[in-house]
Image 1 (spheres, rainbow over the protein chains, first blue to last red):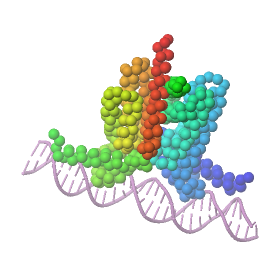
Image 2 (tube, chains in turn orange, purple, cyan, red):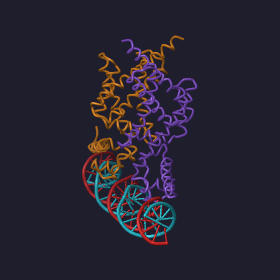
Image 3 (cartoon, chains in turn orange, red, brown, cyan):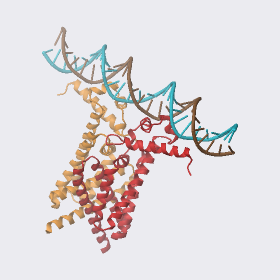
Image 4 (cartoon, rainbow over the protein chains, first blue to last red):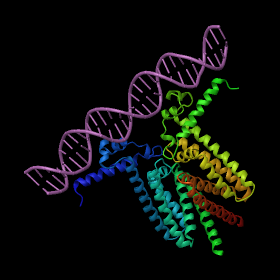
Length: 205
Length: 205
DNA sequence: ACTTTGAGCGTACACCTGTAAGCTAATTTA
DNA sequence: TAAATTAGCTTACAGGTGTACGCTCAAAGT
């Protein structure tokens, strides 16, 4: 069991992480947050920050990891919905858009730091995305009988298109997102059908 | 004709733009540059900066515009190469990778500011990318007989995949870029083939 | 009961930032 | 040739930054 001291510490740590997430928005990236701002929002003295994180980078990497986890969990829930029947692509896109709407800041940090200036951050985001890709590749390999290489290339393309659409959606109102989602579904179908055709070619030889 | 005064001014302006481009690298984004740093690199006093740009944003937008232009010009050259025969996709990817290698900083600012914190920047980059997309969509519509909507969706998917691969390539050594380019070609073919199949479906009805 | 630990605080410092104000000197204009 | 314009400079200031240092005082350990 946690002592009341460790509990308080955990609470403050959460306050810091939440404070940082709350300060993110379309005009504010993680790297533009200062240690002092985050501490202020979490209502602790700037110097107390160091009791929890070595520096801002450590906080940021924590956020990326947490974000990736949150995302995967929510997409997993979405996949369960798809098992009940219907287009996997359509349902996955809808799930993705819902997640995007309810957790925009989780996306912001992933999307921004993916092309950010810190190599460790880029690596951390790449790791999270790779996780998505291989989960999807495994699924495709099993259900659509693809070779491992083709399944991976296909999954990578699908995830790329989805994330990219996500970035665009962040700037949009709900009405425009609908059109975006529809176009995204078409693009994903293109990839799926093209991959199928390529696989057939390979099988014929 | 330009007076010697206007000439000197233009020279300093270029020095500022070049200084800013030169300071960009994997660890340094435009938004992390300070007015003073840029002025220092261009060898003028910080306050003289204002004789050329209202603020750093104005300089940055200039860079995005210049970058987009450079990019389009170089891709156009590549397309001429493709007319001599061979796979359009393969040749375009190779051209893209060459441009990426010789102008990495032009890409950095586009890729980074695409998901940056300034709405005007994001809009400027989106405009440049949209330009690519519609050029490509027009080409596809003409040569592959696609409906306008499908051509646009296809072109958007292709450009998305290419730019995304470009971002990944920036972090790689030449050897790894080869593998990336090969996978990219496969993914682009998936999209092209899938789009073809979708178009056929439409035509049948 | 005593000591040790450690989360959080206040003060302080050196450094960097954007930019306002006003000057100089060379070019351009009249 | 005299007046007006202007690119670039120096100086100056207020405000933000990360973080070193040393203190407090409640909880945990013994």
